[in-house]
Image (cartoon, rainbow, N blue to C red; front, side, top):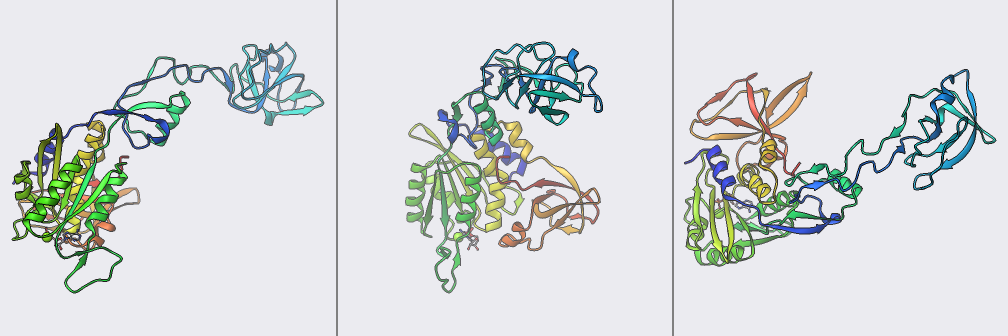
Length: 414
Ligand code: AMP
Ligand code: MG
C-alpha cells in the first residue's frame, strides 16, 4: 500500500489539461484563464472625480475654513460621461459629479458636504490638498502591464476586471466530461419507496454536487449491476463518453467487486490500488489512451463517507489540475494548520486517518473537536464537519489539548 502523499503525487503527475477554447466573458465564471492578460489601456483611463463636489484652484480656497467660507461663482457642471474641455477660470468653481472627467485646470475637488450652493454662487468651507478627490489616470494600472496570469481562476472579481478593461472574449482551459458510475444491486433512487434490504443511492448525488461546485457541468450518471458483463458494458460506455470516470463501490476484494478487473480488461493501466488511508483504503487509479485522448479512472470506495473524502483528498485536486488551476493554488487549498484538540482520539497504526472535525475559534484560539459519527457509512459525521484532522499513519493516540494538523473541507475552487 502506498501512502497518501505518494498517491497524491502520482495522481497530480498523471493528469493534464485538455487544451483551450475561446469563451465569452458572460460564460467564463469558474473557468481558468489560459492566457496572460495585459491592460489594453491605462486604468483609470482619465483623471476623474471620486466624489460629488466642486472643482477648485488651490489658491482660491487656501484660506477657506469651517467658519470662514469662500464664495466662488459656479462656472459650469460636469457629469459622469460628459466630454467637454472646460477651462476653470481663476476665482471660479465647477460642479463635478462622481466619475466625471476632471479638467487639467482643476487642482482639487471639495466634497459637496463642505459646500453650500446659492443662486450660482458656492460657499466653500474647506481647503483641500492638491489632487484631493481626484482619481488619477493610470494610478491603478498602466497600459501594457500584466494583470492576470494564465492559470487564474475566473471569479466574479476577475470577470469585473476583464469587463472594466473592455475584454469580452478570453481563452480558457476546457473542462472535462465526467462519468459517475455507481455499483451495487442494493441501491434505489431517493424519492421512490424503500424496499427490504435496499438503501438509497447517496454517492451519485454527493459526487455530482461536488463536481458541479468546481464548475464542471458535463456529467453523466451510469449504474453498473453486480455482474461482470454488465459492469464491463457500463464502464466501456462511461470511458467512451468521459475524460474522467469516477466510480463508487465494487472496488474492494468482495465477490462482486469487479471495478478494478474490468478497468484492466478495458485497457486501463493501474497506477494505484489501495492507499494507506482511512476512510478509503480501496482506491483505484488508472489511465488509458482512447482515440488519442487520455482517460482517467478513479475507482472510489462505496461507503458514502469514504467516497466523498477520497474525492475531496484525491479527485478534487486532479480535476482542478485538469481545469487549469496552478499547482500552487491547488496545494494552497489543502494547506495544513494546527488547532488544539478538545478530545483524545485513538486508532491502530498503519493507515493515515482523516478524522472529521469541527473547527472553531474560542477566545482567539483555534480548537477542533471530532464530530459524532466517525464510521465510514455515517454521513452525519461528515455533514457536521468543516475540517479533517490528519491523524498520522504511525500514531495511535492524539491527546486532549494536543496541537494537531488540520485541513479545511473546501468543495469549491476558492
Ligand atoms: P462496496 O464497496 O460496493 O462493497 O460498498 C461499500 C458500502 O457502501 C456498502 O454498504 C454499500 O451498500 C454502500 N454503497 C455503495 N454504493 C453506494 C451508493 N451509491 N450510495 C450509498 N451507499 C453505497
Ligand atoms: Mg457493492
